[in-house]
Length: 509
Ligand SMILES: Nc1ncnc2c1ncn2[C@@H]1O[C@H](COP(=O)(O)OP(=O)(O)OP(=O)(O)O)[C@@H](O)[C@H]1O
Ligand SMILES: [Mg+2]
Image 1: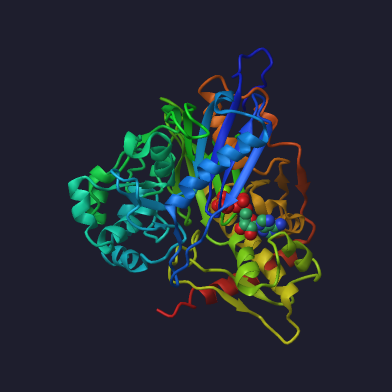
Image 2 (image 1 turned 60 degrees about the vertical axis):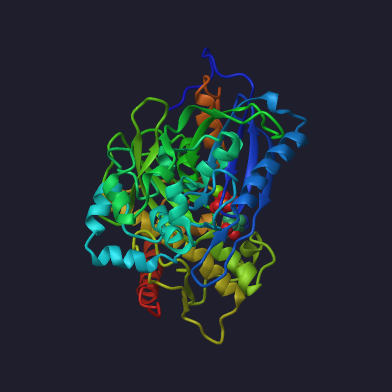
């Protein structure tokens, strides 16, 4: 994999990473050895105006990115001039449409979890476009991807199509929005998106790596509102001089968050895989220079494209609701005060007491791809209490991961022998032990869980020599070995499958 710095010129100076996530924005600074030297994080509002709708305020996101950078630098006594470069990583698929003259968004950003486009997806299926979309983009018809969300805004925001025809609309995923603002906004902002983010829109050909006219026609989206697709690293632009805490710093990497985590883990060879436990869970496996098609409900996606090299691809199992199910226990049910408290509560009981929880809040993603599925809790008795529900929530994270691992093994024809993990919920020891038990393979957790930001910084640093001993950054953590016998494991998993079958049937439509 990546060599150590011994006898090799590596970059000098510090590297910044913007991690614009679903629930918060972060800015981290790493030194030339890939060690974290500063961090600041600010959560943003989750707009939930109607069932199925999930929205973000793009202006709030823009301002939080700036504030995180300013505050992280201030805490470490640093200035923009101390940064050699920055990398950007972001929540994927979420779309913003804005007015390039004013910099104002035309509407709230539609978030990847939002299911308002279910009818459109149903229509694509009905017209028999599923196989063509899968083959052309690597993605099935689903509410998850950007194209339907852009279409919805063009159809529902009054006057937007006319504005687009006048040149008053730019569109992009969050990376495009953040970069356009950092590089000058209305005063000359650069309108670009990286190829990993573009591969999540369902408007890019997975073979051509360019916007596809037939897809643009199907979704009714004018090409001129879309950003230019660029590689995941290189000289991509510079933060505009002026008031920004990052003024003048070159932007040398852009990657979707899951792809950045792949780079952070060093999954840069075919066969290497990682699983990130955040708002959702995302298991990706590098498949090398050819886009592999899944026969078991996984996505084909671009893993990264470094500079002028050819792109590397990945198979991906995306799970919409994992850490956000823990947030649901906290915010909607109020049975915990913080996400971390779920570990103590679930640890009060030996098992879930027969309770199964399928958190299909956004339908079910991989490997089912059923937008009509809805969440359910079953197996309740008078004995059930909040500890059982907390435990069932953690189990749901592990069982959903097992569903995806089964699909990955079936596609690869060989079984995974270990699971490398990261993300906020991976800090939960009980969850990691349960995951090892439910998979029957070791779960390997690095010390540094901010692998997403680290990957963006690593990709950015590569442009000027790379980190020195960066290969070690995600090591040195803890291994969780499976501790239950296979009878118990398979019986529990069969119970989960029964619950999923009912969730597939739980929608009202
Ligand atoms: N100890 C814990 N046990 C279980 N879940 C946890 C724990 N700590 C955090 N979480 C969950 O992990 C998620 C936060 O992790 P992380 O910050 O990696 O998420 P993320 O998906 O990267 O967020 P974003 O999309 O905003 O970047 C939250 O959904 C939270 O509920
Ligand atoms: Mg994240």
